[in-house]
Length: 238
Length: 121
Image (cartoon, rainbow over all chains, first blue to last red; front, side, top):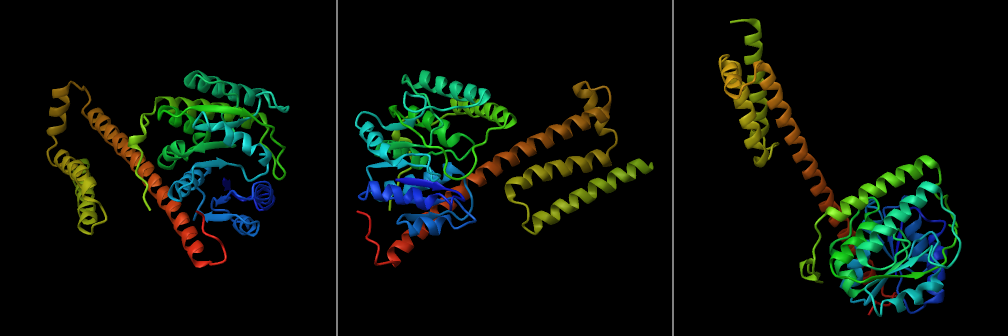
């Protein structure tokens, strides 16, 4: 279980606590992404392993560190869970079960479970991203920006070597990379809870900006060359 | 010799000296040195031999000689800044990798240090 967290001291303890309670046999690694608050201490107090990045790298950097940890310590699967409590740990088993016939499983909204309201522009951006990736992978993907996803060892090996730190790279581009490396990507419908702490960004200007950046990030992801086989991934050794 | 002429020679010589000094003090890496030596020698030559620029402009078919200078200068500047963007991106990627490694090493150290926590696997 990999939890990227940046200044989430209000939520990370509860998130880790819920994970440990529901799945006591699973190790929780919180990657503290250069937080200036007590995120790391809160997570440690709740019983997680904490890797502290010296400065903020973004979700991509935190996740690559997490996948590297998982590969080096011989874990067979890694699940990304956001620290803010949006992701219900009850769905964890569903995600990991999905790994039986695919390499990456996304816990997706808009897939039948739960109701979500998104603004017009943000909705367009999300549909555009989801549609493009669905066509690319040949799988129906409805929520490609979801930060709730499981990866098996094969996919983790790819991610440990190539996990973009750029905007939207951690979600959209990473899926393109996984697909190009021959990973099978599927999704599982999940219900996401509203954030416990913090405000989601909803202003129309931000949504428009999001749409533009999504288009740029997506086009870049599609034209960038990425390793087409696992052999190119950097060898990991302890 | 006009004032313009003297100004040009002085300016190009100062540029040349400054670059040379930077390289001598190892503040400029060798890979950039070639570029800057070429640029500054070119500047000194153009300042010392006033007939050079019009002759070059004539050769490539540029009507106003200074326009050739401006054009070449802007192309050189653009290439340099592209190179810098590239280097910056590469450095960011390298520091990112280091930061991740540091975090994992620290975690490893903590784990080894605390006996109370069971080791994974």
